Length: 223
Length: 241
Image (tube, rainbow over all chains, first blue to last red; front, side, top):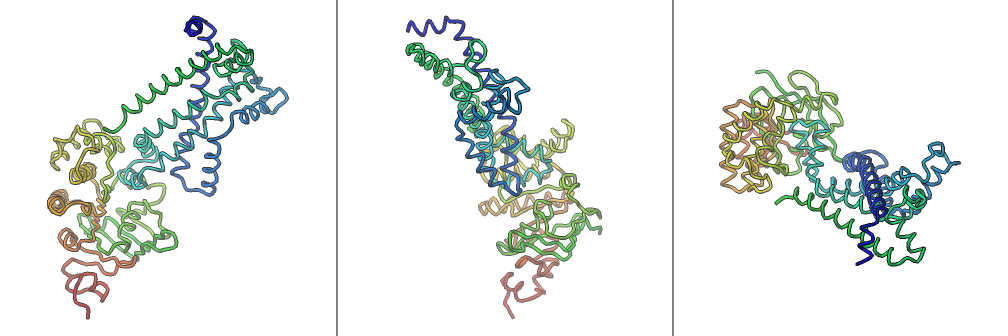
């Protein structure tokens, strides 16, 4: 209990918490910007290679964060192809890695959500004079609960990952240290009590965010 | 009479199979053309091809004398309204469903409100306007679907067996109402049905589709009196020679 109190009174913990939420939130947002249109294209489009791309996306849903971390680190490393951007060990590098982790989840689940809709609904909307954008907008509306679940799954995949954040962020105090990397650090130092308290706080935080998102999702559910 | 719709050398393929082939078909302004045939004959494929929702392998569709091309699809569809067998209403209020196509056309707010209200009343569903479309019975949902289409004041109405999933009394009542509305609005209509009585009751002309081709087209009296061949005769349940 004392430890929980210590955590809440420690400004560094708050800074780490806010940074974690900010980076994971941005990663999820970018993955939504990429994943929703891509998932829609894969669900509604008919083009060669579509099943292959879909299977790649589905495989990407289980992409190990450390592998993503390694890929991003190789790209952003000073001597790497994007080294000139000087992004390695910055919060931006973490956002890039988390977007790569989360995007396949959002894309794959969005595609599945839209494929579950009655295919004739699309014809009906076009038959009422909708253009393609209007039609897609209403399909998103009809699949909104599943799309929201895709968003929650995307957020869940990045708030809990540690490998990529550690590799591309470097766990630098006040700069790139997030809750998961802080837990790894405290465990490494043998500060198990503090690591457990941080873990409980991360779990609680994830639970509260998902509770809020679920509440919003269920408000939009059919009666 | 002027022809509103003209179909030339149309062929639609679904996979390996030719779904429908039409050499030539015209529909005049204000006419109701009933399209009948057994299940799988190609009736719905013809309707969806007319709505440019199925890509034809070949052929042309002319609307008011102009050939419809891919680039003019949306503009063309805004002259039509489509009612399918399932009402396919959206998960929003009845009123929002009825005004849907009007909003697609970006009409003024007052115009949308006025037309929505008119057709909610006309189809006797104004008391349901605030209710969620997911909570309706089959008959109510099909009324909403009809109101949604008539609110568009379409030049061409495409009806794909709209009452086939309804129970008999509801179906008869809706058919009567549809008949009255079509007479009142003089809407050019393609009406698909596999019910011969329904098709001959509603249609000025009747096209019999068998095995993906129009076997015969004429007034219901002509088709019944002079069936073209034994296949048509058998489909109409008339004694075969």
